[in-house]
Structure formats: C-alpha cells, structure tokens
Image (cartoon, rainbow, N blue to C red; front, side, top):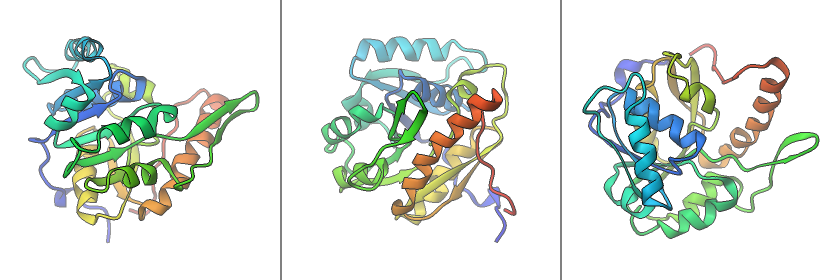
Length: 232
C-alpha cells in the first residue's frame, strides 16, 4: 500500500518533551516542532539551562508568538509530556533513561540516540550489549511505549531558520504498531518529512549505525544527507 499522509492521526494537541533539549539534535527538533505550533518542553539536567534554551527557541524566526515553549529539569519534562524524545549523548544514555523510568511510565518514548565512536579514521558504530540504543531504552523502560525515530535528521538543517522544508524519511522501529502512526504524524508536522515503519526494535541497530555512513557522506560531499525511501 502506498504511503498516505491523510490516514495519520491528529497529534497537534500533544505535548512533546525533549530530554537533552539543550544539545544540537534536541534543540533542533524542539525548534521544528515549535515552528509547527506544537507545545514543546525542553529538558535538561539543569532547569535553568533548559529555561534559557526554551526562551531562545521561542524567539527564533518562524515560531509564532504565544507558542508554548518552556524548559524544566528532565524529571518534570518526563511527567508533563505526552511524547518524550530522548536526544542525549550516548555515553549518558543508560543513566539518563534509567533515572526517568518512573515518570515515563505509560508515556510514548522516542529514542533518536546513535551509539557512535570517533577516531582518526572517522565515525564508527559502537557495539551495544542490548543490540541498539532503543533496545537498551526499552529494557530500562518496561512500562513505557518505546520506538526509535529521528536518528538520521541533520541537526544543522533543523536549526537553520532559512530552511522551510527538510525532505527526508524518518525510519520508525517499534513493537507497537499504533506508535508508527503517532510518530509519523509528528514527523509530518515538519514540512518535507515522512515517517516510515522500518521494522521491530531489533532492526534499529543498523539504522543507528548507518549514521556513521551519513556523516562520511556529508564530509565527502559537504552536504547534510538524509534518507528517502523510494516506491512509497
């Protein structure tokens, strides 16, 4: 069946929290959702840093006056959000996620973390005992609804106010098929994006690892490459 955006649910009323919202990826996603009019909560270990980042995002071009963008400590953001995006550095992933297990109970959790290492030859995928970052998150959050998505979205593109469309596909891995529609609908709030189901959580490893290839492509061609799935 061909991709049909008209079948996606209405997610405009959901509050999106971003754990790691002061980092490049999290901040960029927050900006794009705020531009779309979504209520956004920026999470950080420091509530002050989160509040400062939220104020800066709310003042950026394209964010309508009155759009709800606020910041708080990670725990509060997890409690107040309907959908929580995990966008923290890999080396702090397990500890951050584990600490939020209770406030994330019953919540939709979207993990976009890529376990990568870097050496003089460039980026490379790191082994993860659980299989992938999102599988690690799912193991730490047994009472949450977990998926992987937004792994391949360029932070510089997200942050650039001159760019109106980001033409790429967001690959979604999850055991929960209902989540596919919800997360795809959130992706579609960003002009040019589509959310595409890409298999169960066990398939997320190669998606996370492929980010190393995209970084190499971007370096070679001075680009901000993404992924587009054909014939859909």
